[in-house]
Length: 418
Ligand code: UD1
Image (cartoon, rainbow, N blue to C red; front, top):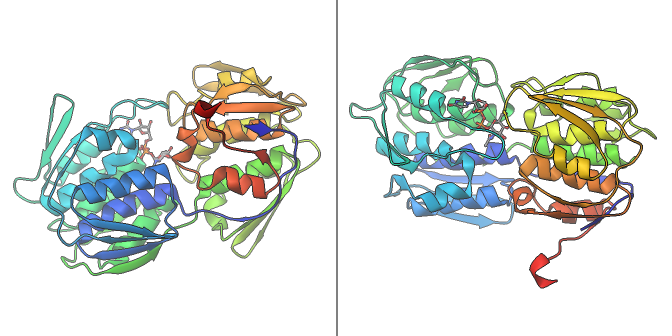
């Protein structure tokens, strides 16, 4: 429940990256050693990954911001549907299990609220490394009958998940692997850095060509997960829409370079001070120019919903073209309920700014769309109730607590108790 209209003011240390932590948690299985991960965010998705690790026989414990995984004796290479369902990105365990056991059995992740999310690129890349895949009754059965061997792989699209699955298998293969048109997201570099810390030899992560030279040995490693660039961008936009100001501490400003110009276009003053990012919003935001979501270093699709809320309350008209996922405007009908003027045709949304949104009863339809609704509610007039907030808990650590500390009128209510 949010009482809108209060300015967000203050500073916050950004949580560790969800999308960085998930593949690294899966990678702990590959190394077979003890991994200590710091700044591992406490989220529904990371909890789901810890459940999967325990299910396959690893010892995974959380201690504050850190997680310790002992992966010396996992015994299972299958993940049941009940665990796969908890987290759509559990497909990242595919590469990890094949690398460790030479086989994996899991349910296909299936459709997702933001799009179809097929795994054809994962399957064909793994096949180049020697993996045979059989899909029966919604189950994905993979094995590498002759072991994994290095390969030259050119992705037709720089898929983040496919690049991660290739890396996880390639570090255990016989011979070098070269990935061309690899995803360049900073989370890929973080995964490579973790694996290199464990003894792997991966070069080129962060560029479109990655080379993996297997070393055959792994060692225990301690790694700090990178800051969450999408959570950081979300908090910056919270300050922007409420006419406030914020200092994000330890936020890896370089990873935010694709979004910082957007805030400036909208009239915010952004400053980088060491590892911190500071934002001061104007009296009224200006409409952005054309926003087109693209793979990194393009504009991130995960920030599109919160960026759209900024446009919804700005002066002028903004246009958003979503090129990554086919169903990523599900927040739009909810924003319309709050008085936003947005029209959608296919993958294009036209947003005519209004001076003020109004409170309403709305529902989170997915993780980033849900966070965007929170931002909309924080700048709206009156009270908003947001339902289905479990989506938001997948990716934002201490969300309402952090926002309340920054001055927001927000509280979690148990709707069953009312
Ligand atoms: C990751 C992120 C997600 C982000 C997305 C794009 C994690 C846990 N999730 O998701 O937050 O929104 O990157 O930046 O890191 N595709 C195929 N075939 C495939 C694989 C992907 O067609 O085999 C398509 C997808 O349907 C989608 C596009 O490629 O349209 C991008 O997908 P991908 O880069 O793989 O995203 P994810 O790894 O699922």
